[in-house]
Image 1 (tube, helix red, strand yellow):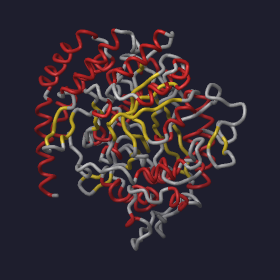
Image 2 (cartoon, helix red, strand yellow):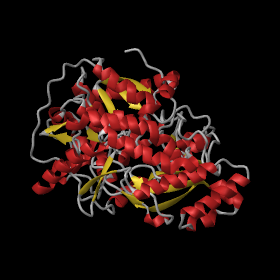
Image 3 (cartoon, helix red, strand yellow):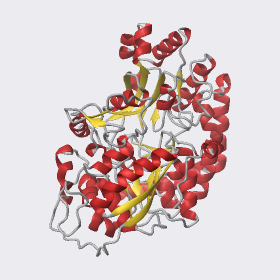
Image 4 (cartoon, rainbow, N blue to C red):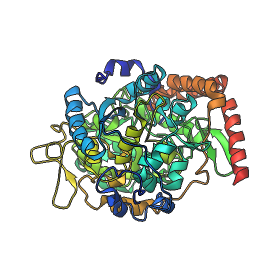
Length: 541
């Protein structure tokens, strides 16, 4: 299939689709010669299922005719990947994959906006796509693909070719992408320990003499004081953390109070549009936006925008926070951070950062496995080969590392401790390819960046994460699909500018318009349907 380059023009035009905020089984062919290398890296990780490792179940794989299978893979990227880099990385990956699993791939990288339109359109038109990512982009989220009946049940292929996937995710992880006895995708196994964090360039804080103030701040007012000082010193300010203008309360976090430790996380129970969450106090489904704390965060953003503390194009930019910090557009962002991510930020923006967590710490939930992951579309012509490929993303191997960091020896190399680093002479500005490792299946089996002990630390941190009381429950939007689409259109119209503070002193009035428009689009019908589903699920527990 002809390679599709990133379309920045289409991305700009489609702003409306932006972000919402083991051992192998004996008879299944091993994807690599080191399938069990993930055992040590994942030791103690509570997300793994003990029953899946080995076991007595014997699954006979379909016969292999010996011919190399060619698959088409759609991938989301937060960084531009030009055609020459695509071809180079693809060639390196295919050389390894052909040797390991006798599969080659046509990888097609898209920016988030293009991905959200292009992938669903390709499936709808019947084009060959054998493996795709599901993402936090609503139109390309797991629940969206499911509501459109665009994903294939891969149960039999997982039994035959997904030993590493099943070992890493376990029953809990697999359940998040299952429905009516079928398995329709596999979620990413991330470092689940983390939450909402404020990230700021350390060199700017050092210049201002405010590093200690930043590290010890307890209020948003103190952050405002730091940003004000930075502005007076000639530095840019706060930037959006996603492509929907989120500057203070990235979903699914809410930061209404001035006190940082009063920010909180909410469980959106598998809603990739993040229109609702469940209040654990009374098991009530609520609209994410119909929340006084959320409104307060928007008013704060409006005030900061008026004062020039927020990037003026935060509501419309196609770039993401890391790229904007690297390019000098901003110095600070508020976003979801997992343990150890600051090291990767240093690698991607070329500067050390200081990180301050608010009180909004995440819990393990169904959304932990449906935020990022992989699926096989119903248009797949090579589903067996697709699952073989996906399985490689759940064990330590060269394919996995190449997709994350590029070609070893050119884009990265291992230092004497076994960590990934830039080769001598290669920098953030000159490297040809460097991705986010959380995009590729099991983060714990990718060679860690700069910190050789990071994966063991992340696995240990996962054990400290509390589980949501609603883990195992995921909403089904099939019956309210038209209302969900209507509400998403309302979100596209209002949310980016509200989140970026563009309305300034008129924020409260625009917020009221936003809520009224959501009600007119059917948000209350959505809530009622999801409440019925939740009540039925709770009754069965």
